[in-house]
Amino acid sequence: MFGSEGRGWTLLRPAFKPLVIYLLAALFWSLFGLLAPTTPLHYKEYSLPVLAIEIGGHLSFGVLAGVFTFDPVLVLVCTGESLLIDADHLPSALNFPVLPRLAHSVFFALFTGVLICYALRREKRPDFRLLLVTIGGVFSHLSYDVLAGNGQFPILSPFYLASFSFPYFSWILFEVGACLANLGVAMRLRQ
Image 1 (tube, rainbow, N blue to C red):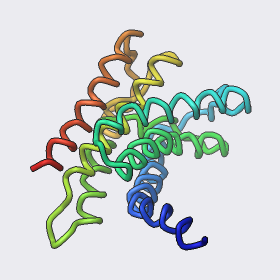
Image 2 (cartoon, rainbow, N blue to C red):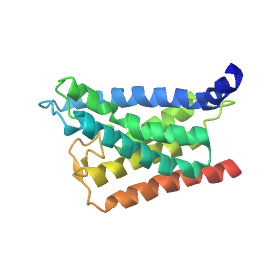
Image 3 (cartoon, helix red, strand yellow):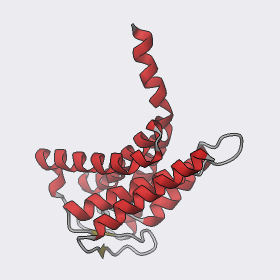
């Protein structure tokens, strides 16, 4: 009885390490906000009903993008990353004078993707599928943020800390980009 239940978790265990690395990277990346101290902002996301909708939205967009990998572990990684990127809100929520949302950046996606690839390399070769999944996770997160929010984030942090505004319909482009990145993973898996 316990053997079959344990097997399900064993299949998902490979998703744990990339998600921990990603979470720590998002928290670390938010420290760049100390370069531009600001009055802490308290977002509406911290109320329970809105937080539940926010989590559900990011999870669904992450699953939608991740499903194109056709790999349950990578679906979980993409979904987790699309949710865990909001760890960069934590320092601001704790009243540290940091600019929030700095992990909402293409440089964060690239840095974290490469970091995960090299940290979890197999046979001394980086697994670049994880780079594409990370890019897909970040893009799916940005997609939902544009759809449900104001579409403003510092997309070029830490090099340029000002926020860019994205038009409402750009959420479609972000989600399509996330799906295409993960489709690239599926194509690489077939080779």
